[in-house]
Image (cartoon, rainbow, N blue to C red; front, side, top):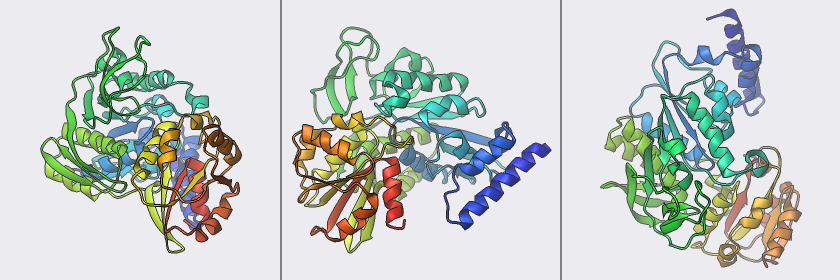
Length: 429
């Protein structure tokens, strides 16, 4: 190893140690330090390592966790960026302790826009594509633009095996199909009415059924676009509850400790990858059933003798799916916390696209409580939807005391990225 690389790794590890001493996050800064000293440091950290990249709009963190849990049954040494630090500096930080002389598998959550940058340094063996929805429009502009950005990364990793969501129309485009992806999907069959446009010709798609958003069995009557043949399919959903689900992967019944159709998709993508990599069914079942909730993903804590559940919502697709889960909940107090820092996306116009009809069906007590940097703007959006039973508490630090005084035992909090982190800090997490 060249001297510059040794200095970069030592400096990054020292930075990580100091951050941990002061109880600070050590997920990205150490990697940034290493890259500043040696821009080619990844060449020294990736020997004897098989790489799996997980990217897409929603579900990256949970899918990465599912995959990591499965592959620990097959591989002795696994590495992952389980903190969710999915840009290049976070990935470098995760690889600092990679064992140079031992075979390792690295499961990395990768930001959609950074896939094309990271593949300059690392050529993954597998790329898992969860989905692409409208998200951070000030950054990504459109789903089509995001798709093209992801394709740039795939082109640089032309030998990678692609595992893609076949229920998503944009992944049926020839631009992706030419890489011979393995497709996965779910047969949930929620409904038939849908008004999404064909990503190829712009005409309205025909749906035999859809699961949520634009995921389902689709075809375009104007051009060639059809849902591709799926290699791995959840063909039976036995039960979906707010905190768990039971599904069939082929003939194998699996009970998940997470709720929602979106988490069924996450588990399905992990199953598809594991089968491609030759993992046995028993290990897959044990790993999927052993996976617990992650911070901010149906995360449950107890505060003032109340059951507080926190959910990260960063776009309308995720927001709507969490609300669908809450439809079957008994009475609870409902909080929305919205920031617009860079990590959240500055443009919060997507909030006007959430499903107001579903929100009105929720069994929340009293007023919806809104907090965060964009609390007043979101309150105005809700009023424009005809939802007036709201209360704004802009300072997130005041939410804790408000929870204490609520009459309900159940609290549900929906917050975007930095807002969720701010709330967690305010209650000492």
